[in-house]
Every structure is written in structure tokens, then in C-alpha cells.
Image (tube, rainbow, N blue to C red; front, side, top):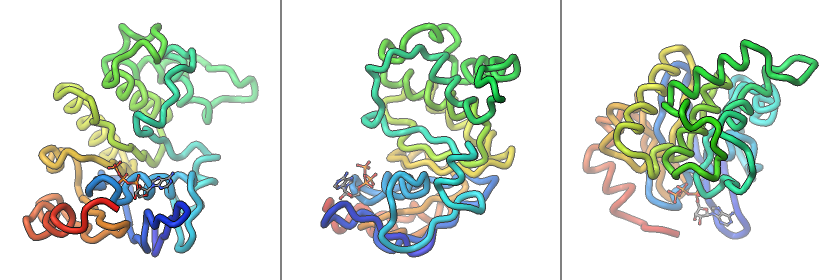
Length: 236
Ligand SMILES: Nc1ncnc2c1ncn2[C@@H]1O[C@H](COP(=O)(O)OP(=O)(O)OP(=O)(O)O)[C@@H](O)[C@H]1O
């Protein structure tokens, strides 16, 4: 994205933000509450319309990338409607919708992709439960499984580690690394600075709606950069 501005009424959530997240890499978005991480992900998904700047995802517009099912997302927990009476396997199956043929039915290869994704996040035993009957961390893993089943080129994840225990966090981190090694572009908003080195090739530090540094985790975690992002300004 180049010079992207997102406003909600009078609030400037993203302020001429620039970011390039290449294929084959995991890019982490870090910054205080309200620094603009979710807004950046929403702009990349075409869920908010920027008031300025340009967003290109996989060579085209965010909406077109979504239409072609080339982008998958793991939303923030608060954005998920858990009252919807779907079982876990069906939620993961949603990841295959972009692959379906004219019958719109899941075929053997789709079922296989769903079962693989469930196994990779360790949810096979809970696959028949409704999504409402999972714990917060298990639900996160279900949405990660949906993203895996989609086999998308671009993965955008909003705090996939929130409420997730250490073993599951390690599992998700390893999966995201594997997907990037396979050529996917992975962008993850996270508050877990301790896990940054294991997770990400690069980290983009947001403050006040701008990307103030984008470099290796080692460079971004230098005290002078953390002070820029976490020590100044505060929430808006
Ligand atoms: N729907 C909305 N209406 C009005 N303001 C909003 C809305 N969504 C976000 N904002 C504001 O936009 C700014 C950026 O919010 P955003 O959710 O992008 O931050 P974030 O970095 O993802 O925060 P967090 O770490 O808390 O998830 C904040 O000031 C927030 O209050």
C-alpha cells in the first residue's frame, strides 16, 4: 500500500501508510491499541474504502483478490459472530468455497483439504462441535484452519495469538512459517513482541496510523524504535 489513509468519521485510523509485504515472507504488524493495525488489514481486504492512497494485493484490487479467493483472513475475535449454528468442520469448509465447481458441493479433494487443515491445528476431535461451543483459543485455531484450507496466496491475520496458549501459538507460528516458505504472503497483527523473532521475517511498527519503521524484528525491537511506538503518543 502507498499513502493509504482510512478515516472513520473524524478519526484518522491510517494516515498515509506505506507497506510492502512480499510473497514468501511473514510480515508482522505491531503497535499500540488504536495504532491502525486492524484498519490496515481491513484496507488490504477491501472491507474499508481508503480516503486516499492505493492498495494492491496479489497484483490487483483488494476486492478482486477476495473475489478470486486468493486472500484469506483470520478476523479479530470480537468480529466473529459465534452464535451462528455452524460446526467447526463447516467453518473450515468455508475456506473451500472459492475452489468449488458448478455443483457448489465439496468434492473429495475439498474434504481432504478440510480434514488436513483440522489435523494441522489439532481440532480433528472437536470438528463436530458448533463454533459457539469452542473456547476462544480453539475458535482462533478453527479460523486458522479455514485459512489453511483455502490455500490462498495471501493470508491476513488479526491477532491470531490472542487468548491462545503457548503450544497452540507455537503450532500456528510454525504453520504460518510453512505457508510463507511455500510462497504465501502472510501479514499478522500481533501484540506478542517476545514471539516476533520466531514468527516474522519483517515487522512493521505502526504509530498514529503510520508505518514508522519496517525492518527485521531485530531492528524494529531496538529500544529507540519501541519508544517511538509505545512510549509516545498513547491512544487516540
Ligand atoms: N468503526 C470505527 N469507528 C470509529 N473509529 C474506529 C473504528 N474502528 C477503529 N476506529 C479507530 O481507529 C483507530 C485505529 O484503530 P484500529 O482498530 O485500526 O487499531 P489497532 O492497531 O488494530 O488496535 P488494537 O491493537 O486495539 O486492535 C483507533 O483510534 C480506533 O479507535
